[in-house]
Length: 289
Image (cartoon, rainbow, N blue to C red; front, side, top):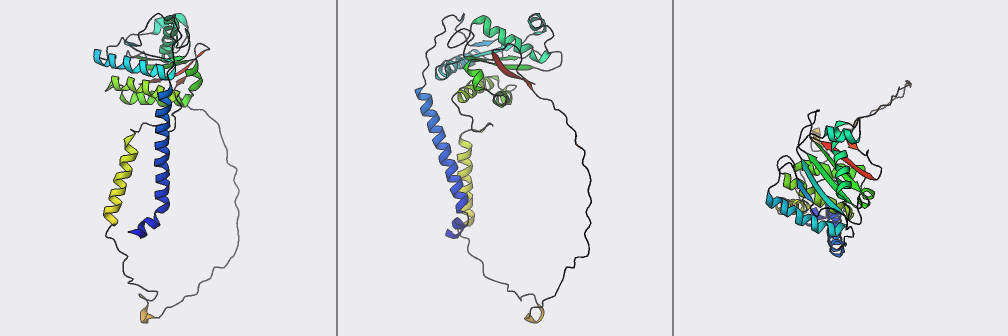
C-alpha cells in the first residue's frame, strides 16, 4: 500500500493544499461577514419594500423569506438590494424616456428609472446598491429580458464577467424555480461584494469534499490488497534460441526542401450580451431567454 502513496504523493500534496486553501477562504469569508454591520443612512427612500413581484411568480412565503434574506445581506454589504419582476410590455415606457432604445434594453431603462424614482441607495438616494428587473413578458423579438443595474459601490465592484456570472446563475433556476433564482441573485451579490470571486461557476460547497472522500475510498478499496506482480519476461523471453539478435539500421540524409507560403489574416468581431449604456452613473448588464 505504501508504494502507491509514494507514487502519488505529489497528487495528494496538491489536493491537500487545495483543501486547506478552500477551508481558509471559507472561514475567512465567514469571519469577515460576521464583522460587517453597516448602518443605513438614506432617509429619503420612499419605500421600505425590496421585493416587487409584479409577475406573480413568487408566493407569499417565498416573498417573506426573500425580504428577510435581503435585510440581512444589506447590513453585510452596505447596499440596497432590490428585486422587481414584471409581466408587461415596456416599449412605450422606455422609448418615451430614451427614444430609439433597443428592445433588449427596455428593462435597463425601467430599472434605472425605478431606482432613481424610489430613491434607493443605502447611503443616500441613488446611492450604493443593486436592482434586478426580470420582465416575464416576451418582447417583440420573442425573448424575456433581464437587467442587473448597479450603482455606487456596487458599480465599482462589478466587471462585465461578474455580471455575466451572476445572471448565468440566476438563469440556471429561473424558469423552474424563480424563488431559488432570486435567492441566488441576493447571495451571489453578497459574496461578490465581500470579494468572494474565486470560482466563477456554480458548485455547491460540499461537492469538492464529497468528491475527494469518494475518490479516496475507491482508491483504498481497489489497491489495499494489490501486490507487485512477479517478473515473467526478460530481454530474451521472445527471442529464438534465447539469444538476442541486434539488427543494424541507419538513417541517411539525402536532401532538404523548404516551402514558404504567406498566410492571409483577417479581423472581425463577434456578438455578445447586453452591457452598459444608459445613465452615466449607472452600471450593469442584461441577459435574455
